[in-house]
Image (tube, rainbow, N blue to C red; front, side):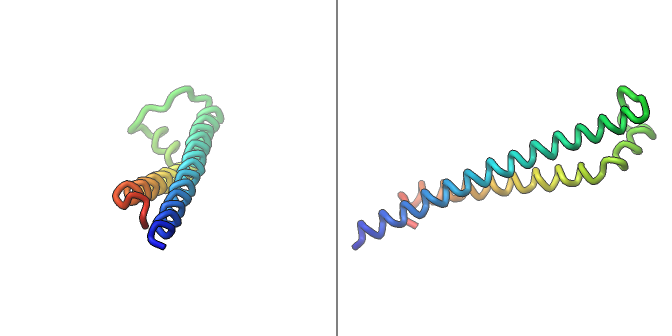
Length: 103
């Protein structure tokens, strides 16, 4: 029974690692999309004002940041979720490595 239980535990850990890896990919895709959305929001704001470049620490910079606060917050949320997903994957892999696949 012990060897069979170890095999089941190892399979369960491998499935967890696979799920965590899928989560990482999904959250990374979300992060990339949010980053693209933010860049688009920046460009739309500049295009509407016929501005090519916005210098930091200027009134235009402050206005740009205010106008794009929502997509910026979405990107920060997506980055946090991606980081957490990576940490969960790393933890699952470590558990596999330290237990030899036994949960």
